Length: 344
Ligand code: DAH
Image 1 (cartoon, protein in one colour):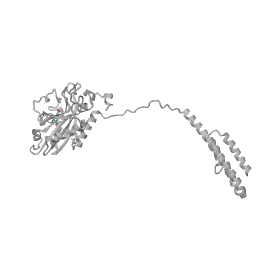
Image 2 (cartoon, helix red, strand yellow):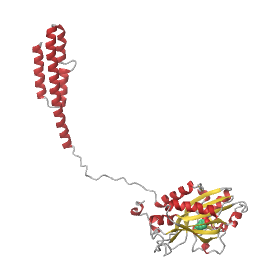
Image 3 (cartoon, protein in one colour):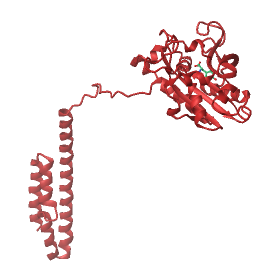
Image 4 (cartoon, protein in one colour):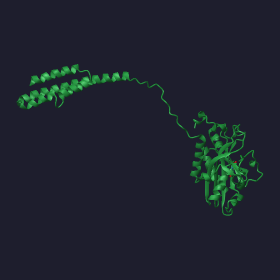
């Protein structure tokens, strides 16, 4: 039996030496070392031997088994490394080649600015007016009459406002303030809304003016609303939009639909108040108009001015974005130059 083992051992060694691939080695393991392999079938004869022989022959068998396993493993490792190197050589991958970039879309800077402003007011308790209460195609009635704008006001002039050629009294709205009227006609106080949207003016286009732009209108009507509430809300808005350290001032002004009226200035972001070209040497930049809703406007929509008061405000989105990001030409927002848009 010992001789049989030696024979198998020798022939297995030769086979291993002659093996060329991992596949060959697998075949050899199957032939000699598997449960049904030659080596095992001999080991089955062990049971017929004497105890003494069982021990020596068994030890020999184990030794041979272990040795063959080692040889197989050694060869396997060599083949494996070779095959891997071969593969690496063949499948060379040039990772320095530049990849294909998928273009990523962005939200337009004006939409980003609008969203930012809307969020600030939502956090102060304002909700956004339904679009149906804030139409871009308006009647003179909502755009002017109900806002207490006199019939001979220059803003009504065709040189400022786009009138429809087909329907009389129909205009492209020149301000979002008409939304105030729609909202007050449709809802009872307390009213606390903002209305963002596009407005149109018959302007000669230049770096500061376009013939359409965007505004955000605000309206708060309730019992006991005072100018103090107006200042509190708008100061907080400016604090959040421009930062806490930006000084503001309320300057007395006039709008037909508010009384008293004011404009809000922030300290010039270019020169920090020293006076420069951007602020025309004043050190201040105007950012919005506001005031207490005029008694005539409240009466017009059937709200009793002895019970309710309110404040309103309106601001230009382009202007606010230009001031915050130091953009010096309004047309950049509209000619869709990717080099500009990608910066936001
Ligand atoms: N509608 C005005 C404009 O376009 C802005 C404005 C001023 C809106 C005062 C208001 C306000 O609501 O109270 O210039």
